[in-house]
Image 1 (spheres, rainbow, N blue to C red):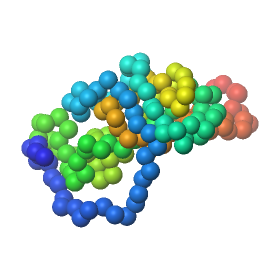
Image 2: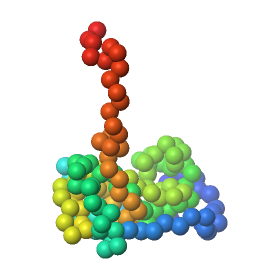
Image 3: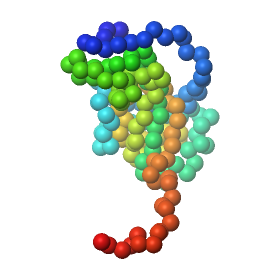
Length: 159
């Protein structure tokens, strides 16, 4: 793969220290990385998250949430960049300072709007990945899931 000006990579041995189990596939209108939006938009096109049949019962209760965190494997991404030039302008920053798909472990995340669930398929808006991307996990929105803190003295007072 080509490098942009000032980008750096590191030679890596084959990874063998972890294993993931993909639980489904993501269906989007984008067939190439170039077609994908840089960030998903919550008002973007409707996409589908198709779970493997074994995981259908794991969706029970998820319909109570409006927003779902989706974790997916960016299987078309390079994994060896340590510095990147995201705008092809020669200015580089470290990989961990970017949301770039090029990462040592290319896990993508999106907060999506859950429209509906039917027959093991989530209909959502807000994705930004290529059609057929492997699904790693789903979680309720962390803010919606976190219980509110107990009210403290002075909370309801205005300054």
